[in-house]
Image (cartoon, rainbow, N blue to C red; front, side, top):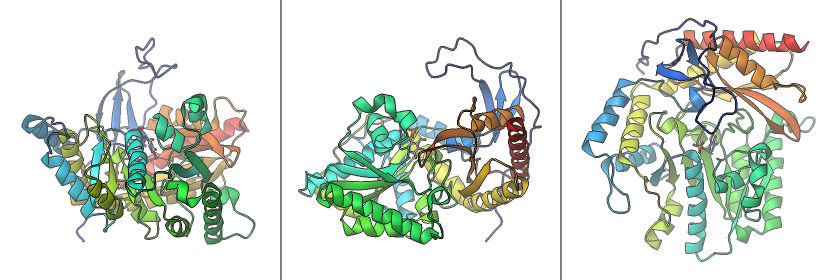
Length: 462
Ligand code: PLP
């Protein structure tokens, strides 16, 4: 195999930002507190309004997998915009969407035969829910109306996606608007936190599978449409690969009851875990019937998501005439042309190999640098998707992960800090998910900022 050709990256000094670049009185709805304002970005580096440079350790939100300012992508975007900027998918097809669908299905090792492209991860989850429903209605089983997912889990912010997922902090206010009867939850795998004494990962996985089996029997298998799961949990658990044996055990139960298996690869897919699809990296040969993708698909250059569909579901939809769901911007030609170029670059430059190597390097260096550091509960991940789970008093304000995140920012590194509930206990985690083009030197640089920032935050608690 020829060596991967990594573009040369500028390595900005990790100088402390001055914070003069925060907007006050912003006209935007989302943020109560002032945010730093980015004015430009190149490769892994953001430049703020005051000229401060920050290295992006998390690709925005595990999105920018090729870094910023990739001229090949910009060229693909411009060319497609010039050639065919838009056509309504109900009236006309377009070449980039066909090519993108074929590219992805061809690399799915037989898992998928067709695709539809949408705009956000949440939309892809809505699409998956509706496709499951249509599948069962067309099969003459309209009584199937339940979806089982996991707790905690995050599958998006629109009302359907919010109902599939279950993170109380994101969901509670909207509960009266969510379907309370259609969506049910079983525990997410959190082996380190919740295994029994002497319970191996495989036995733990078998126990979770039998809990799923019990839930299916309680609801009646004939009433259930699908089981939804992330191959590697992102936002809900701060990057959690499954314990060994999990997907084979779960799949046996799901298949045994003739229920569809849907994998949400919005965050973990498109190369993030070192294979094009996350299930190829962690599901031990198990393939979903439907898979939702987003984030790394457009690499942040366009807002695109998709669902990929296996033969079993595709045949039923085809027989019915069409998929009974549609959006104005579905299969958008510019989005699809850009996503295709992203996928082609990842493949041509053998970036998945870099994802695997740099990810392993990052976790090894983190384990080394954080050895014996209190409050660091676990360092884990797959590919360039790394989580550091923290132990901290839940009364702390600001929360511990938020403190570390702020310190990293002061030291010139952007990461994500998450707080939530794991097995009924308050949990905190840091997420690191840089672009696939990251160099070994940049990984070490990020690790040293992380270690320094975590140690400084820990010593403040002593
Ligand atoms: N599913 C998962 C696993 C996610 O991590 C996210 C977003 O973080 C979504 C769905 C929703 O995607 P979006 O924010 O693009 O709607």
